[in-house]
Amino acid sequence: MSVQERKQRERAERERLIVATARELAEQQGWDAVTTRRLAERIEYSQPVLYSHFRGKREIIGAVALEGAAEMAAEVRAATSAADGPRGRVAALARTYLDFAARNPAVYDALFQLDGGLPYAREDTPEPLKDAFAALLESLSEVAGDGVHPALFTEVFWASLHGLATLTRAGRLLPEDAARRVELLVDRLAVV
Image 1 (spheres, rainbow, N blue to C red):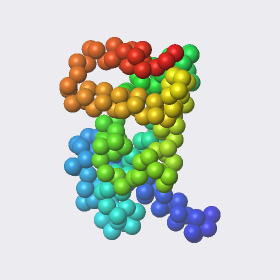
Image 2: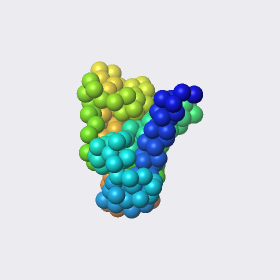
Image 3: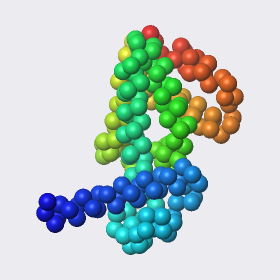
């Protein structure tokens, strides 16, 4: 291995450590607790080292969002591939999405609530974000209904899931009705 390759590998490892530590700190204490000073202390690097990877917290949030998008896409695909039929795939997608949001609140915030400097719904949207949307589209396109554009249907279904995830987390919805909400969403929106 050349010196250049070793340096690149070490740089990538440091970047992964910064992102993992930021994510862990955000999940434990919230995003307000994530500062470059605290990250530097936790990973035992100087703040200038952090700034050599990320210009600031905004870019760190963006990196966590990209990592989270890839994880969510993988989880959705695994769940939907194990389900039977279009309705089963949509129900699995909905449960998996809501479960992901509940298990990873800081990542979910990085993806959909906070400014991570990432462009959404544009040509220059990063691949992990496009792929997360594609993971939803793959199952939802088969239940969009005649004359309904699959991507538009996916946006509406996704917005419904996002609303459920956000309201549930804020304590605005009764937890015991969670399964019934998913069934109602699938029954009323998905044309099977």
